[in-house]
Length: 262
Ligand SMILES: [Zn+2]
Ligand SMILES: [Zn+2]
Image (cartoon, rainbow, N blue to C red):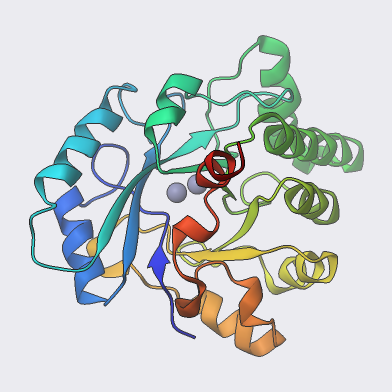
């Protein structure tokens, strides 16, 4: 299938190995109409941006590149980290205002809001191999963290790689996505979720988005895993938000939807 854009990429401002310009050039070469630079929020150790100010630097770099001759639109976004079970992200409302796209995901080594949250999410996950009791508790905590973030952040557009690093109850997460108009990501960089989880999410009826999660220029717009899954499972292309005929992020951006109706 053909895609309108790739809405999940990382530059050197977080843990990518590419400049904003590299991402833009790679997206032009792939023939995309839109690409989003979505660096990690600041509170994940090692992989995050150094400070929230980095997003205005990225925005400036995007503006500086905007006189390049192409019909590519470049969007600024963030992949925020989920910090606790109350739906708290590591970027604040003021910054979210400045972004075109908001993604959230669970990532290892994120600074939790409190020590208890650190125990419930991070520690339980690292104890998972000890046995069923810890495993079940970890899945419950992870699911609650993902579901709350969906309910508490009305601007959230995309839940990234559901279940990666932190196993979740896919059905529950999928239902929360549907109720809150959040896109369920098929992440081609990690080839995640696995087919069985995608079948489950599709059965529940989510809308998907297929992204690269690119960290290197040669993977921008590389959406083959998603394409293959959609073909193999016979998923309706209308359920893929970034399919080529879908019309781009203006059709699904939560923020634009709110402005349109308020
Ligand atoms: Zn991620
Ligand atoms: Zn990512």
